[in-house]
Length: 108
View 1 (cartoon, rainbow, N blue to C red):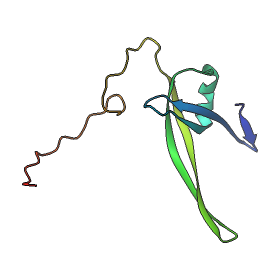
View 2 (view 1 turned 90 degrees about the horizontal axis):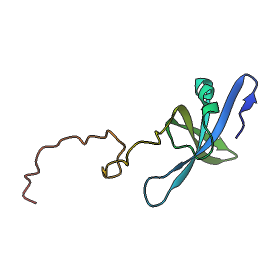
View 3 (view 1 turned 180 degrees about the vertical axis):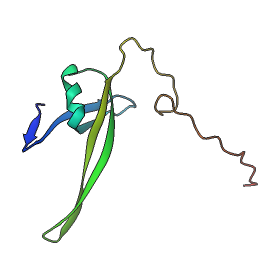
């Protein structure tokens, strides 16, 4: 999608498909500010990692309440094509280390 400009604010919406798991999800992510400087380096079907902030806005209009949620991207990087397949780590991101817990010695 092409960037949109509103007065002095420019944003570009990208669609990213999550390819982990059996059922992929597609996300609409708004990129703005300095992250737009890097958008020219990507094309459709590139494998990328995107860092996002989740934003929500409450509304109450004509007695109807709700919340709008959006994903605001702030960092995007290409995933290396020559990387080896990720290790099976229970669906957690690379580098995830579980917190060690005390042994469960409860009698039930």
